[in-house]
Length: 175
Ligand SMILES: [Zn+2]
Image 1 (spheres, rainbow, N blue to C red):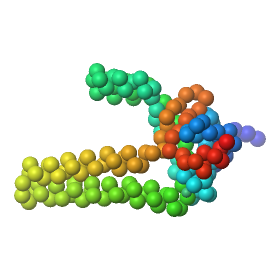
Image 2: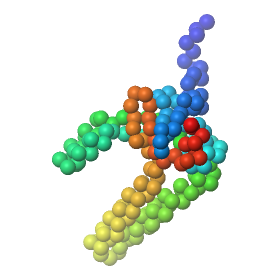
Image 3: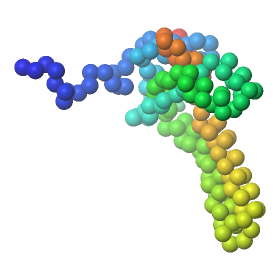
Image 4: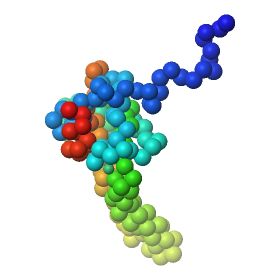
């Protein structure tokens, strides 16, 4: 009998990843390679809403930011080559998932309306003032991105990844 069944369920998946080896590292959570965060809210430590969305996060040495002083394009290319990647599933309970979405929408909805309004102005009236309104809308996307990325990788190496954005109740549970 063929033991190499290509249709067999994968032996390792997010759900079977171990959580026990995660540990606290000051204000950060450390997740060893091959592990994932426990399925609890990273804010209040309650049971997380499932399925938890897996996120791909990137990190590169902070020294690379010095290249921004030389040339933004050179920095972008070098950062793309030397960045490290990790996959992790930060959980949120129903309350904190909704709070996070609300915070993002504070910026996303006005940004969308400004862009739409700007395009409207360009079409019916004044192209130059329309462009200014569209650009304002784009600028509002930046705080939306910042708010949605409070959970981020602060270091990734061969042993694992360190994340910021986890609150005290959750961090205390990792000790
Ligand atoms: Zn919570």
